[in-house]
Image (cartoon, helix red, strand yellow):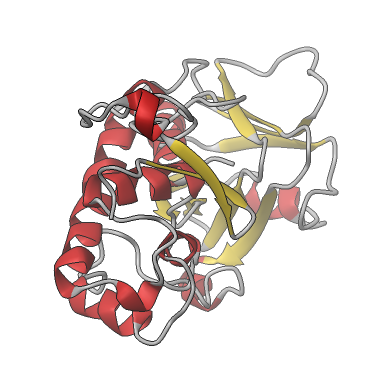
Length: 279
């Protein structure tokens, strides 16, 4: 699933292509996504001008000048393609097409776990998709004291806690492993065991890792591509994710003795760590 850096990259790329554009036409080939495309979706947005873009957690928001906001989530396999003009034919799984006077956005989603819905722009904070979200990693609220309070008396593994969108929104499986590696914290440590100094490191490296990933265009592991067709490159900088048995870049251990990077499953998700550096 596209995580925060991938969604931020998609948002920025789409904004560069169609910000300020007028929506001319909408084609809904498949309305049955994770949430159904609203019946009045076309009527509500055709003729409107795109005013701005925003990201909340792993959602892209497109604000229109008619008081409506398009909320877009990409699920496990969804992607947006940008075309200079409306295609004459569509590919399999091209479920939604938005034609503007600056280009055409095509939403392709083989597994249909994504969603495209509408909300009145001034009611976004009350929308059910966002009502229970924790702070964004760059919000002032996301700080050392906040994390310590959230982790207090919590037995859940710290890796699982970082994936909990009610604690901090946007962090996914790839980046949780990388953040904990940089913070030198074992992912199976209980949340309540995290010290103030370690919580400070989690805040620091959450922002650092995500910023570097955004700069690299995200991570292309399976089928993620940017809307311009290019891939992300942050996977080339992964220290532990999906590197079982390899030596991590900052470790001087004897890999024959340590076995290199380890893999475990926490909260049903594959988790990677260095048993030598992380404590």
